Length: 254
Image (cartoon, rainbow, N blue to C red; front, top):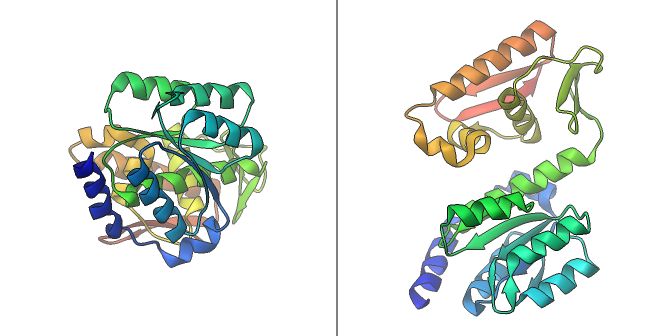
């Protein structure tokens, strides 16, 4: 346990937030449910440094009490708690129809636990030990998705997006573009992050998740972006996906 905590403290300084994203994530509220004191302290310090408001719970009972009183943008949930299993909290969230984002933390890299947690409504699963930079990226991805779905219609240039139906149109939704699921995911992820360049690695990880490690090249990503560019151009979209050589991609209005 001492070695594990030491690893967390070692990796923590590797994270540095991009200042142009601070306004987007200010006032975000987290709930950390963790029974290990050193881990809980490190998570609290991390949250404070990144400007998140943070509540903590040391066991399942306290966590259930917190979610009964408040809504959170994201819950960091250790599933192995002294008074019960964190999966029960997921069941309560689902039963109460709450939309809090959830990232499961576990020392066990168990496929069964991952499938169960995601099946119960968790948004992500992170195995200990981990980098705080990775945790922060996953928190922000969840918050972006939640905020993106909050608005019924999203407008960018002359694009109109209906997040609940995964529809994209030009000026209106009468003649939606014929996009694949991955093309839609790439487009909305770039729009969500239109003020910055998205590296090809982070874009691939966002779209394909854990399966990205199994591919030998990024040809699959290049193909998706090439098709998406063609469809946007043919539809008359006033946007372009630019390739920043050696860095990644960014969407811009034209």
